Image (cartoon, rainbow, N blue to C red; front, side, top):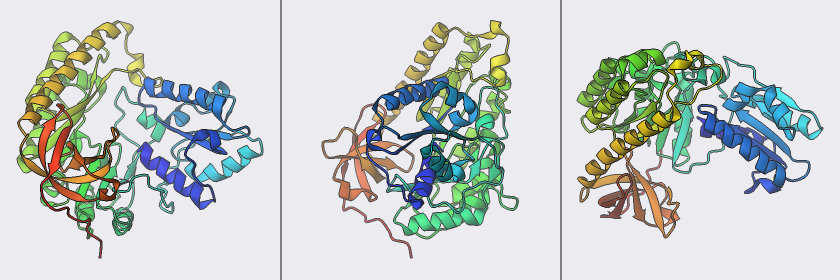
Length: 430
């Protein structure tokens, strides 16, 4: 979602005559777009702002945008005197005007929620040349006790289906063949007339679209209609990132996740019955207030039962303003215990993933070339439909192409592969 918001801001600044530069020390305007999900993310922003102050061009305007800006508001102006702008996720329309004011010496702030704002008239300047991130929903109504998102992004509201379809057609006409639909609980999408099942069918019907993904869904919102649409729309990829957070019903209730361990496993069973080749990834928090050894063991048992392909794993990070910070102090799990549990969880997930991936060596699969690999040496990073990463030899000219590869090696999480037949050119719309 932050990448998408950055694309919106870059697009509107480009429309007002700004040109992006490669390094902040040469910039007249520096925008730091932020996340507030975990305290660690905010501490990194504070450190980054300090670095910028030492190296930035004299007279440069520095702005902080996004969720951390929304959460802290004027406190950021007090903490960092070289910051001129603080703008929340609903304030990007004011960005050009606030920058002009800052260049005259005025410090500005815009952290008001706008429940009508969907930035429909903005033209994003996309960073990715292969896939497009398309927001379909902003905000969240679930109010999990550990989560700051309802505070930083406001209540849930959905874009009109026709607007999402229009944007999808535009990106496909521009040469992209994969779309990722974005929302805080994306499958609760409803524009007043159409639900998420309608949206999947409409987007999946766009000529030239080959891959359709979405993130992040909530287990409670996989209705029968949504699951049927996923199974019947060819473009929908065989991968779902399904946040679990805990495998203990007692802890899930304390988190206000609104499902039980059994409810989560039922959701998994329904998805896999409809899409047998489905790959699942997840989010898990350890050390939530009151989590016992028995609660953690229940989490491990769900991880083993579901056999997640991968997991984003975290120690509980208290966020000011969330109900979890007001729980009795005696429920606090020590950092030592939380760290030990996190290490065991990571070992369990990686061990299962490694064993599964070793069994896939020698098989062939379709991949989409996404970008050059970070490690260089003429390697490309590609992705399978079920979200496996495969490194193959090739050049930048192959970005956006579909290949059939044979999986030849694995580190346990990432594969290496060899191209086994002629490259397939990216299909053009029309």
